[in-house]
Length: 199
Image 1 (cartoon, one colour):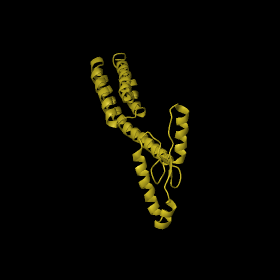
Image 2 (cartoon, helix red, strand yellow):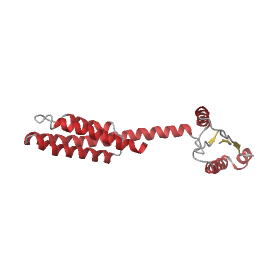
Image 3 (cartoon, helix red, strand yellow):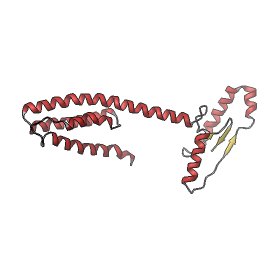
Image 4 (cartoon, one colour):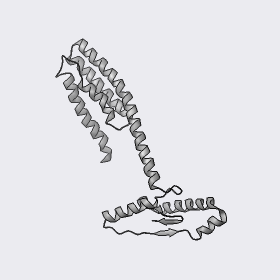
């Protein structure tokens, strides 16, 4: 289930960090911890989540590590590990905010481009190219029956000639709005030409 992706991912990361913490304390009590610091700095590059949640997760890991290091290492080495962890935690926070903002900007840009490519600029309905693609996908992937409706507005040219193109555009927007409300979100409602619509 899509809602379980992030919790499972964080659970997986928790196991990795627990192993890294054990390697940096219990298994190497006489040397500085390196593995967990590398993970703390690298983590924001691979996780796409809200920055505050990622920071909270890393904060818990860092706190757990600092407590554990005082238990297994002598005072000077433990202090050095804690100072290193705090410094790299701050660096990791900066990386997480930058990385997540960059990734989100890329996703938003791609979504805007996809939306502009697939929708009609005036009415906001799907355009002809996208409509044809969706119909082909539907015909290839399902055995279910479907209904296709072709519509056009009677005497639309006269509206444009008599009242102007601005009025004609408003008429198209109004018609598109009523048409999209009359059908389900799962139905394909598109403008395929000047005053021609397909459902």
